Length: 115
Image (cartoon, rainbow, N blue to C red):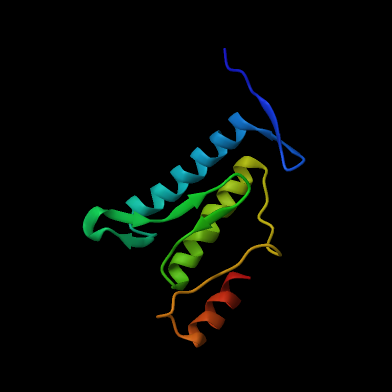
């Protein structure tokens, strides 16, 4: 028997099991793209691996190379996830952040591509 617990955090109900299942599905979608070398993430610890995402209760951080190809992969993964889960990305609360080694011109081009 599986029991779903209802908790209240910051005034809004949280269904623990569905959140965990959705996080697992998004993680698998991202991992699939990493394994097929379409998403690289941020190298950490030498050859130990790459950081591609961090999932929080209501927020997610996705990490990718500043390229049109990886931007397309992120968009495709999010579209697939939203289609499956019924959730939507709130673009007014979403941000694209670049590392200091990415040129400002590339910022503009990628942000324009994303929206």
